[in-house]
Amino acid sequence: MNKNWILGKKTNDLLWINLPGLIGLLISFNLPEKSAIFLIYYYFVLMIPDTGHVYFAFWRTIFRKEERESSPRYWIVPLAAIFVVFLWVYLKIPYLWSAVVYFGFYHHFRQLYGFICWYEKLNKRFCKISNRFMYALTIFPFVIFHFRESVEVELYSDHDFIFFPSPQLFQSGLVVYVLLVGCWIIFEIGLLKKGIRELNRFLAILTPSIVSAICFLKGNSTAEIMFPILMLHGFQYWAATGISLKRLNSKKYLNLKKVFLTLGLSSIGLVVIEFIILEPLVTLDYSYILTTSSIKKAFLTAIFLTPVLCHFIWDAYIWRHDHKDAPIIFNPDIT
Image (tube, rainbow, N blue to C red; front, side):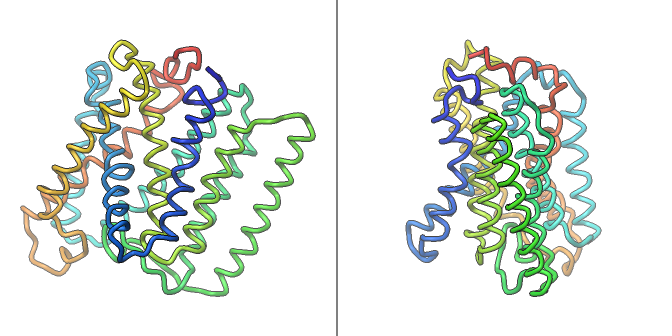
């Protein structure tokens, strides 16, 4: 076992943490969107890495008695989410789906930060500059993405993103981005000259940066802009949850394959229930603003969004370095 890698082997980390986003890029930018293969890819992304990883969080939280009983947040957060979304829809407050999407991207960038910190912990060398470069190289493309023109992207609705089309600002942003990339390359060369070679930390910056740059600066459709990010984020979470549960309960989860199989099948079951029963009853657009207020519609929308909102909020707690399980989860000596 190599203690410099989260999953114990470089090949495992490449497969689950680094490559999924890059594979998503290759598929999204090359598959014809009207083909049968693309339809399979479409449902795979939405059901497995995207919605599926949301339910993975339940296995670290409410499905574990020790964790569930450790804090009142595991009943307060769901009730609060239902209450807030219900009022949001019932009172016809705009930008519900936009709020969820931007909350999701905040969650995504924080997860990327968590992975680079995890690698730094394994390397026993924390590097604030690396962390800042990771944020800059992944978030800045997302920022200037909002200045692009004629971009068609839809996750929950066709107005999830709030665009401010400006070719001038977009071009200026590209110049700044190129300078950022140049500064990062110079920084990494400086580390190599000092004899610091940390492939794990380097990849934790490189791969998500490539995904962010190509998706936000080149992508022109939902598949090109969102799917590689969902692949990256979702499978990273599979990896983190898998190794954490294996370390927390090694008797039940003998190896990562069993963890992924158990959690994957159960999560797919929950996703199917959501897609077949709940989603058809929820209108994923802003028609709630124009129609008569409906208690039923407001309540179903709240139920639909509660799992993902709980995932966002609970994750900010369960992966903290001061969480009671952190000494076990982040300990490479526990196989």
